[in-house]
Amino acid sequence: MKKLQFLFLICILTFTVSCGQQKRYVSYKVQEGETMRDIANRLDMKTKDLLRLNPDIGRKPEANTVIVIPNPEIKNGTSSSITSDEITTSDDENTSETQPEDTVDDTAVKPDGDSTFQQTVYEYEFHTVKAGETVYRITKEYNITKNDLMNWNPEYPAIQHNTLSIGQVLKVKSIEKIVTINKEEVLKNFLTHTVKSKETVYSLTRFYNVTKQDLIRLNPEYPGIINNELSVDQLLKIKPINEVNADENFTFYKDSIQEDISINLAVLLPFKAKEYDSISSKKIFNKDYNKNSAKLANMVTDFYMGLEIAIDSIKEQGINVNATVFDTGNRDNNVSAILAENKLDNADVVIGPFYSSKAELVARKVNAPVVYPHYSNKQQSFSASRLIKSAPDKKNYTKYLTSYLKDAYNGEEIFVVGDGKKDSNNKISEIVNTLKTHDSIKEIHVLKPTEGYIKKELFTDKMIPNKHNWVIITSNDYVAIADALNSMIGLPDETTVQVFAVEKNKSYNKIENNKLASIDFTYVSNACTDDSPENVKIFNKKYYQKNHTIPSNYAIKGFDITYDILIRLASGKKLTDTFKDGVSFRVENKFDYRKKTFGSTSNTGLFIVKYNKDLSLTRLK
Image 1 (cartoon, helix red, strand yellow):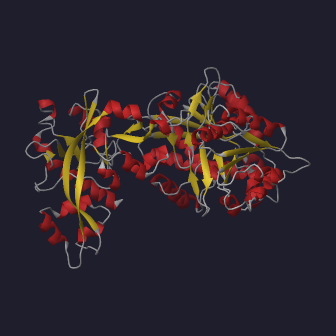
Image 2 (cartoon, one colour; image 1 turned 30 degrees about the horizontal axis):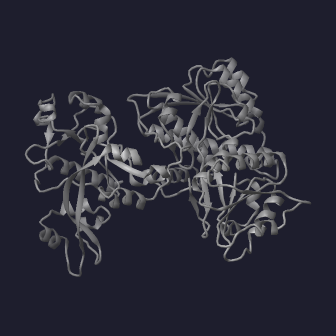
Image 3 (cartoon, helix red, strand yellow; image 1 turned 60 degrees about the vertical axis):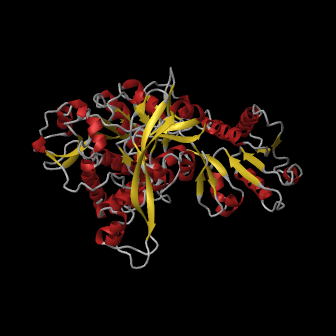
């Protein structure tokens, strides 16, 4: 954090001198009692634009905090009510305007007309450190300041202490250029993204499931991407339009916070405090004592611990959350009494209850959105208009997989394997019928057990050497799954195969991961684990500090659902209206909500995940 504060201070100083005699931005010292809204009003600008210029400053900064503001002397050619005595500038006129790693440049040139787009970009000259070279020597060689060197190379903080290492590659000169992009041509041929404040290269690659190398290759006019540099309003090419899956929602939801917002949250969870009053905590969570009771206790407790972290995180952003937690008792039997006493009348949103029958009841009685917090096999029949299903319906899994397969098909031999049961047969019919709508897919081999198993020869006799094969399993039965997977082991070297499953159900947990990895096992999932994003690291750290353990899947679900709902409400919009604004991606879960005209709202956020040979996972979609 200290490093970020230091870099931010450097950026403030460089902003104040980058425009020569007519500086576009200057620094301003906040007066006692002033808010960002007060300052924005005096500058005749929007509060959100001022916050965008100062991403690390809250809405109510402390007195004497230095912020960046547009120069009042040149803003619209007039002066504002902020006087020159209140503005501070740097004495070092040699400091250049530069960008720290993984940050957004707010000085981007805005679109010029309808057909072209002008953008300020920075190209750099590099220097490789040799033995005996010092910071002073390099700054003199390139006629730059030490501040320039620190700003351009934030990955080497030791420069501040005049420490260098042989072989370090340093940026030593920044060249500003303005490029003109044919906007219409780009929009026609590519899926694009216009960069917003605080977005990073990593956040975009994670959302769109592309690599940094993809962005660099498609956007050569922006060489700063190599160093994780983006600019506000920058128009990025994400992928060629012919590679875009028509079924995928690529509208990126951007978090926004309305000033002085307050949210009343009601939480309905079956803690069963009365029932557990005379039972020790050791027994409550002990599966050997009562398997079903322990399972529920762990689910509810973990979900709530994740929910607590989400509320804390929202409050840290200046949002007032009034949370009221209700114990709904055994099988949510207290719900009727809670409703009868009108305890939910002031709620802006309700999370819970846990049981599907009670969720419908609450959604029909209250005037607020009701978020069902986990998956139930009964949720597909939900019809209450205020009910929001946070977990995707299972029927969407098959559709999502076939959509991916149609998009990825490149001449593979296709096998669909079932167990002869009704659910498996229905999935086979849907997969086969959908895949055959592809112009190039002419034949699909459907295999079902005969006398309890499927002969390996039924696969190998139809697998063509030197041709890749897809095997799609629709069964939930362990015996049928193990039988099919065993047939994939020991195939001839010239025969390659990738095995797909509609879902990684419990039966796959009995299969060795090495075996799954050897067949490129690929499946549909409602969660995708990646511990590298900064928001994930922050959550894991907070959770461990508070609970002294790592978060379970239910704890992550509790955080993701709660945080997403609260941050959407913080925009000041009606919750269902924010669902139209795009897809959000939190710690592990994706939220792509779709509202039925007459019925409940469903989350359709899913992933396609593949096992790698090293047992790591790769997100394919």
